[in-house]
Image (cartoon, rainbow, N blue to C red; front, side, top):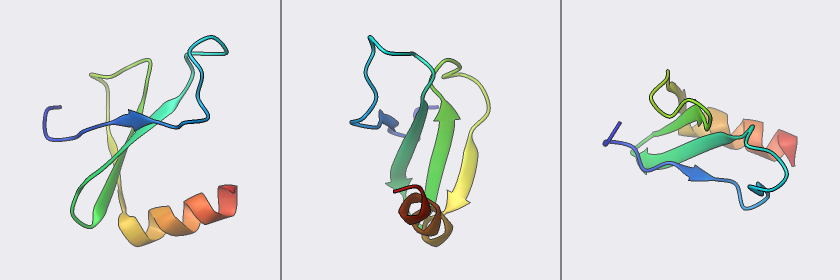
Length: 59
């Protein structure tokens, strides 16, 4: 999916596990989320405000 620029969390380490989610924030108003093990798999798109609430809750 060339339209998204996915990144892994800075807390992810390749030596610990490859089981990560990646996020892309370069789509206005939306955050895209995917499984790092399946880069060509499905992408979940979440509203930016909802993602912010989720991320704050996880912290």
